[in-house]
Image (cartoon, rainbow, N blue to C red; front, side, top):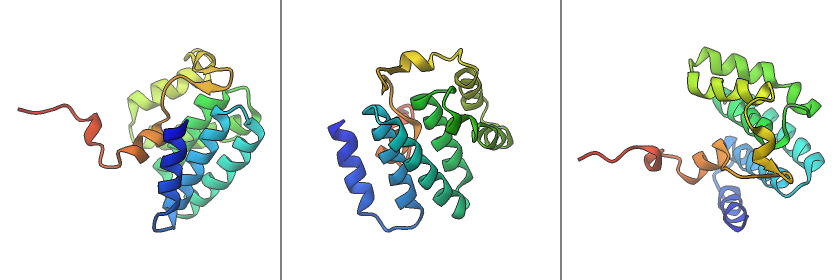
Length: 143
């Protein structure tokens, strides 16, 4: 959690604009991970609305995906935005993300095991993206 807090602090010192809303998603994820779902929902709603204003459709879909992972499909705030993320992931032909999204949305994707006591066992898509915006850590080494 300390690493997440440091990442949020750094993101909060950014250039503003859409980056502020990405930091908001990170704050929401931290609230969810710390067992504060009501605060997380409010923070997600605010951050997602801001990302929409900037036209950041993929980031909105990732934020909803994270919301689904951390809060679960039974949360009404999550259910209310599932169609938007599904539509974006389908349009982008993000088959692997969409497959995982659908499994989580249907309750068969192990979401509850990832939310042991409201805490994720894995990292969120947006947190990983914020930690490595160039994506170089995810790329295989070439010789």
